[in-house]
Image (cartoon, rainbow, N blue to C red; front, side, top):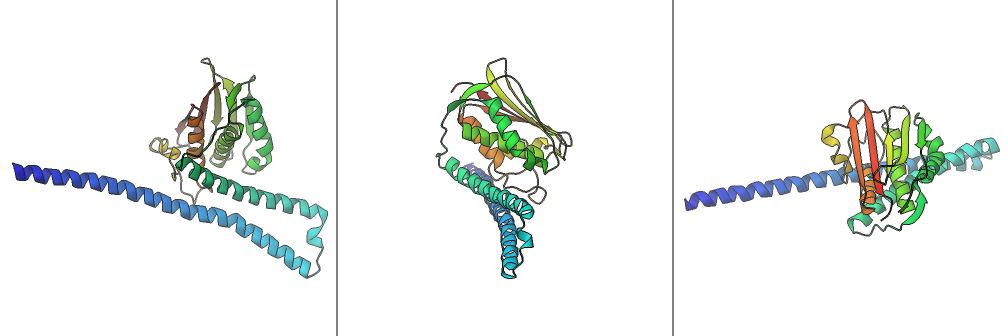
Length: 258
C-alpha cells in the first residue's frame, strides 16, 4: 500500500508540474509573439518615415523644388503626423503594460461629462477612422457627468472605437453613452464585423492575447487588456457580447462617483 501511495503521489506531483510548465510555456510563447509583433509594428511606420525623408533629401540635393510645393507639403506632413502618432501610441501602450505590471498605473479623477468626452474623441479621430472605410455613428443622450480620470477614460474610448473600426468590415460603427436605471454611466461600442468566437471572448482581455492573427489586423493587441485594467481601477466593468460573422458589442459600466 505504501509503495502504491508513493507512486500515486509522484504521478500527482508530475501532473501538477506538467500543467505549471505548460502554462509557463504558453506565457513565454505569447510574450515572444508579442515582442515579434511589437518590433514589426514599430518598424513599419519608422521605415515609411525613413523612406519619405530620404526621398526629400534626394530632391533637395538635386535642386528639385516641385515636391515641396505648398499643395504637396500638407498631405506629406499629415502622413508624417499619422506615422508619428502611431509610434507614440505603441510606445504608450508598452509603457502602460509596465505600469500595470508594477502597480504604478495612477488614476486622477475629475468631474466631466462622458457624452462630451466621447463626442470629442469621435470628432477628433473621425477622418483617421474613416480611412478604414467605416462610418462612425455617435448617439449621445443627455449629460452623463461622473468623477473619473479623463485621460484614462479617453484612452478606453479610443481603444474600443479603434478596435470596432479595425474589425468592422467597413460597416458603420455605433457608439452610445447613457445613464442606466441604477444610476451608472454606460458606454456602448457596436460594430458589424467579423465577431469573436465564444472561446476567445474572455481571452481577448488577457495580456499578449489576440482573437485573430497579427497578420490579419495590425496592432499589438494590448488595447483591451489596458482598457479592462483602467475600467476596473475605476470600480467599473467591461463586457463583450459577440457572434462570429455578426459583429461585437462592448459595454463599459462606470459608477458616477468613486
